[in-house]
Amino acid sequence: MNSSNDKLKIISSQTKSSINEISVVTPSMYAAIFSKFASAHNTVLNDENELAKNLLITECTHLTNLQNQASKSAMQLSESTSKAISAIKEKDEKLLQSVLDETQKLRNEIEKLKESVYKDTLTNVQNRKWLNDYYLKDDAQNFKDDGTLAIIDLNYFKIINDTFGHIIGDKVLCYVASELKKTKYRVVRYGGDEFIIMFSKNVSAQKAKEILNNVREKILSKRLKAQQEMFQASFSFGVSEYEASQSFSEIIEKADKNMYEDKMQIKQRVTGI
Image: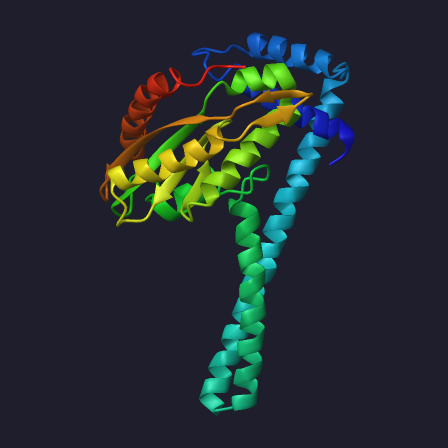
């Protein structure tokens, strides 16, 4: 991505973060906020149509590449299947071994393709598509199995962005994500500064709270540095157990409520910059 697109990506993220708590956002409001951040980055938006066209081409190219790779993998799988059937029928061990080698290579390519589809590019954790595909039923948005999840929201993240800039904000997101990944459970970037952790079935809500408390205390013990100033990062979390066929939105709402109760408590200990 060129420097112009990099700036637009930063401006877009800043705009989305700033309107996160606004219940209603009109197009003109969004445009005004976006323009404010664009001015701060010395980005001229006179030729907006050309910018939009270039971004659309970039995104379409990415999607086309994914589609082409998926089609290529499907063709290879079809060919390998046909060879395997012939090898089994003819009891051709040499051909069967060749099919096995091809299938292993194909599997590796498919895993790389899945990684590009399911990873958040900034924090390198899973994205919402991964959550939908692996944990939820197709259209109903209900859980496939029992389990426990936690929703995590960074404290004072807007202040960090406003004080030190979006690049530092991104580094904080990556730092918190890396610490959450150390729990060895699946971490999902749910929103701008929100994450979800999907715990295994045998982890109770109480155990999940203990795990996240330990991660939070570790993060709070670190002093981060930006522009010769020191600051702390922290997060609040809410945990909820769920059962198969329960609504995802219902469980998220419950966890979100628990998270805000936790936020009220943690903000008595941790203040903004």
